[in-house]
Image 1 (tube, rainbow, N blue to C red):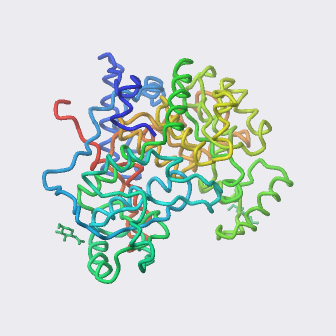
Image 2: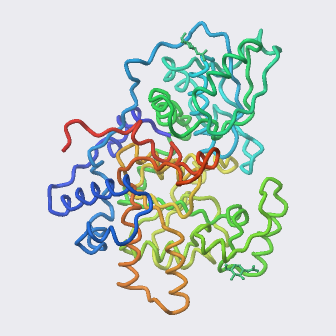
Image 3: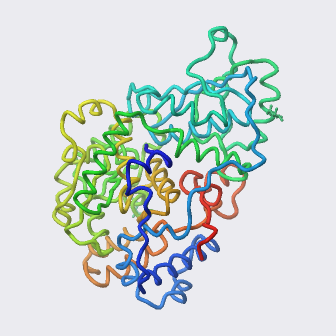
Length: 496
Ligand SMILES: *[C@@H]1O[C@H](CO)[C@@H](O)[C@H](O)[C@H]1NC(C)=O
Ligand SMILES: *[C@@H]1O[C@H](CO)[C@@H](O)[C@H](O)[C@H]1NC(C)=O
């Protein structure tokens, strides 16, 4: 991943936020963005009726003006510098934390950023984390294959001491193997530090995901999480270099949408979504689900799952969706994904609507991709970079990648991310299937209306759903890394 500072020098697209001309449409856009933010802050689930009061223009006109425009940054920019209260690190600390990071690329990146913050809170030295090799990803990549180790250590030098490995004298020292509680507070780790450091010099953390709360942490800890994720965790140079090249190649063609098309076998099997599939495929997916031990849900009602909006959109559905939003058929669409389930069978309809689909292997040469082919994590890193740098990002399903990319785009200047309202869309698609609704103007109005507050414009991070307590409350909060506003994104002083 390219960093805030590093990116700017080599990639003009990155820093130069194109300033829109002060046309009427830009003005409408600003008003729109501002009211959207206000409304969203005040109420997470906004009833249809309220929104009509604010918008006199038809939604499709508003959206048509902004099909591409997320470049104004709305007067916000990253703010990750520590506050004045932020002290020097405990260099004398002889306490160490070792970590095994679990999950796919983006789950690990978030987990590592959390562990840096935890090491800071606990006054510990962090040993470069081990990466997950056993997850579904089956990838043997080490930290150094994915990330730039010396950059990581150096850029965190004022925050946390990071070392490549445990000092030899501690290799055989007894370690406290510690499963930290989920979404823990800073005081949890402070208490833990008091008791554990009395007995141990080394704590081993076997799992790094979601160990730190999203909210109510000291501001400097939140900013440190952002500095780590967006600065310190730069990808290793082979990934970084190829990623930049691919982004450049895409920009040479024009503006592009990065589509995180999560229509992959593991996702369909895990979610039990069988809509539009044939008997043999449904069986294949069911067998995979039954044989994957860590997927707890085995019996899934596909129809119900789809009606609830819990299925990834099919390629065809994505095509209808993008067309209804007003994107012309000539648009370039980069498919950020692994292998699409069913291949051309299910891609055909999307390709018919949008012939300019671009895949990794049509963008890069075989030689360039050689080293990435057998490393899912490294290929995912390329998709990540291409998605962050795209003009528009559209995830067909929620997940760690979609959240991470959305958060990073917000951080860099609220670049447009269109979050499909899958539940609402499926209801419309079913009407199309049954002949009650036709593709055309009516559908465009409905889809645009449905998505006017799902475009990645500035707003505060959502809290939990109302009425929940304890873990369930923490679980339903919006992820810090999906929207690091307000802690790491600030309103520019001189903007209106
Ligand atoms: C970490 O070190 C600081 C500064 O020496 C101290 O104030 C703080 O209590 C320490 N925290 C823990 C959890 O040990
Ligand atoms: C699955 O859910 C749908 C919609 O809720 C329902 O109509 C159907 O009867 C369910 N099927 C089974 C086998 O339970």
